[in-house]
Length: 81
Figure (tube, rainbow, N blue to C red):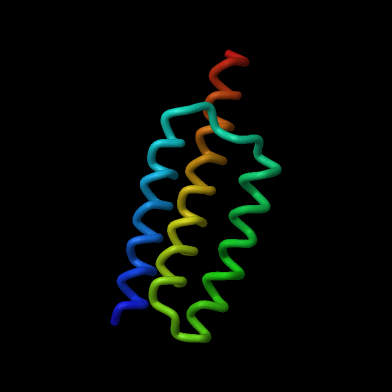
C-alpha cells in the first residue's frame, strides 16, 4: 500500500506540472507526437502488467500530448488567418 501511495504522489506532481505547462506555448508537434505514441505503447504495457498507477499516468500523458498537438495546430491555424 505504501508503494502505491508513493506512486500516486509522484503521478499527482507530474500531472500538476503538465497542467501548469498548458499555460505556456505548446511544444513542437514532433515532440508531442512522439510523446503521444510512446505514451500509448506504455499504456498498453501498463495494462498488460496490471499496474494501475502506470496505466493512469501514461493515459494522462497521451491525453496531454494530444491536447498539445491540438493547441499547436490551432495556434498555427490562427496565425495564418
